[in-house]
Image (cartoon, rainbow, N blue to C red):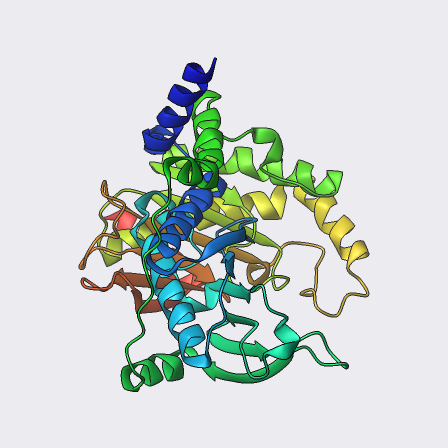
Length: 384
């Protein structure tokens, strides 16, 4: 029995789960793999013990969150060093995970999308160590350091600084050395085996369950699935993969209908203008004419009539309530390079066309046009 357990653990530790074979990867599993890889590296280099991991990935991956325990007191300079190195390691692992790239809210993934917290423990009473850092963290690009417990609040903020300020200070403070920590086989097993087990289970059972793709009130789920089925047909017609219906931007309650597609084609600007107009025209026709959407629109109009944060709802779906994203990725899960278009975005009543920077893969806007101009261009080109 012990021998079976040993080989099972060894298999989970060293096998690689081939998620790439799935048409639509489960990015929750990919997030777990990135978090575990980061935790392993930081434990080995700096002795940080993973305390917890989480994030935000309802429609797209918006947030990675990690918490670590430190079992020795640290100075402000040491805390700064650990936070910067932790952030660098996490961002490196996120952006180097090619399978997750199409599902990130932004690629390269931004510093504002990570949260890291360090909690300091020691055998001594922390209240007797004035000035020592007992907790620190980075969130929304800002580093904060907490010191001794006070009567009015659990932790008192010692100081805060931006990420750029912290990196600049690291250049001028004395070098900091941490004794590398080697995990034993069993210690490594218990920290990462769970993630690999669930990855294997996911792979063997055929991927994510459709039941969990959309959640919420029954009317919203039914509408989401109606649109999902419509989008699958549109995606097939134009050789795209439909990701999902929902919010794919940094904003939350600013519009009602969002559609996200993934393509592998290499299209220049003119070809992208035609494709964007074709896909959006079909989507918008469904939104304007389908009885299912008309009922949903009326339900939402009544539900949100007193909600100031929600965009105004109308009897019929209007352009400003609709958004579309078509992101292109090649066989290596890299963005296609100019003159090919890397992303088409319809937002704020206009089409936006982006190219990828050859060095950083960051997007840069190359053209913006109204819906009417895009449709007119598409019609003129297809008549030739």
